[in-house]
Length: 359
Length: 273
Image (cartoon, rainbow over all chains, first blue to last red; front, side, top):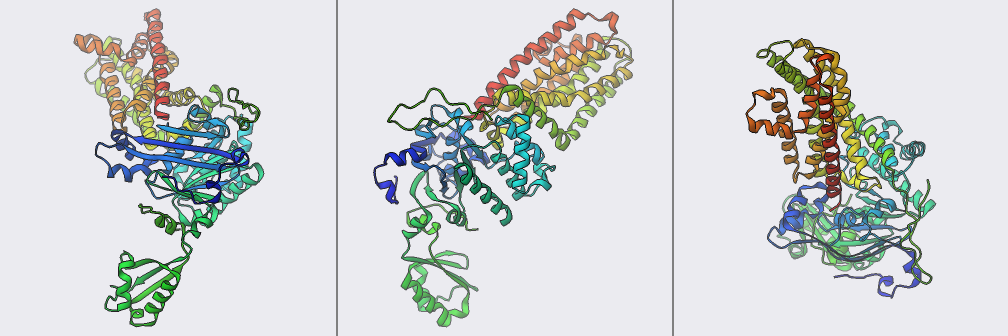
């Protein structure tokens, strides 16, 4: 199923948009045989498939990607959003030449990456989720070695290393091995290795995991600098809704190996614009003796003491008045009323996974 | 940085625009040197305690064997000293390297190299060369200690300059191949340990005391030829059959080429599936 929510996708692609497309993916399918899927579930780099793997340990193979279509435009910061197991990592592993698709096509900057997966490394800088190859190196040597392996000569590699360490403010950590750094610092050092030896396309798999706000800002500033200066296209994998809403130009929402929506974050949120999200947190048990509260109970998604309700605006206003005005207020610990997020879009479009992060 | 255009997919007029230029590939020797340097630097962080273990293990075995083997030139004393020295190479180059590649593969660490435009051979050879280099101090210390313990002539120790890289190539190629081909990390560790145990039992004990089938097993183990080459020189330069030493070293070198080629193929297979 390919749900197209934007206006551009419904129109026939013009010559201009075709020229503008940096990456075109059509009908991409990747299936894991059960024995391999079991193995894959042990690999942290493929842990995205774990949810579906455990659900389907019977003889049926698991379709981690089930007919994916995507168009990523030049200079765009394009996101792949979905919970763990949605197929995001499987998709980028095919884009980067690490996995071969069972069917479908991938064209990147005019190159057929299904026929020539080796070209991916010469077009893309990839930041994966794992750093075990670099863990015992110092930050400076990890960056310099990666630059050398991206084809830079010794002098250019040293210059690129110094520039990127300076840019990300990693100078003070440059002599320390990655394994002795905190999770966020290590992630930033790995991000530095993705930046040396400029590539026209950056593929970043959850780059800001574990980072503090300062490091996150450094990452997005560095990304923006490359987009402005070189027109770099960025493909970002994330399960963080807030990050997706604030940094992305466009986002494809993935669920169970399929793209269920693809548009700008604002356009996607407009799909559920007539709804608002009401979170109620009770001090102890919810006061179900109050009729207004009892009426809300069947509509709520309950998680411990927290009730989450997605309601039309007028209904939400009335519910807030009910719980804050009457006897229910004494039992109420906290409440928030929020405009819908991409998580609400994901659920409204029929997304069945849980695990999207708001942080 | 030079930029090389891709040849085969040039588009004609009216079609999609020409493919974007591809960044150059990293060349074999510079990237091999970069991997070697990076791997050597890991010794400071993680490897030094293990290198001590490798050396103490070999020296411990020699001290133990000194209780049952007489000092002075003889087949048994030579076997113990040469076998224990080459055991250091087997411990590091075969066992630790199998574990390293097994762990790298299981954790997804190979992705880092596989998404860089680097020849597979440079990753395998650079890492194998670094692991072979780790064995140099331990092997020299073990050999010198063994000569002192068993009253053997240390004049032939220089032959280790050839034995370490050639036996190192054979054993590290084998270790890398085992680590990359094993379906699971635990099996890579197990195979590495078994390889080292075989090098210990079949290298340290004199061949003439072994039953025939065990001797065949000894003959197919690559470390045997390193042990033999070194053992032949321990009687002093006058008593050394140099042609046999050269033949043993040639076997080590040939096995090294084959096992490193196998490891490179295994790396390709492991990196992209």
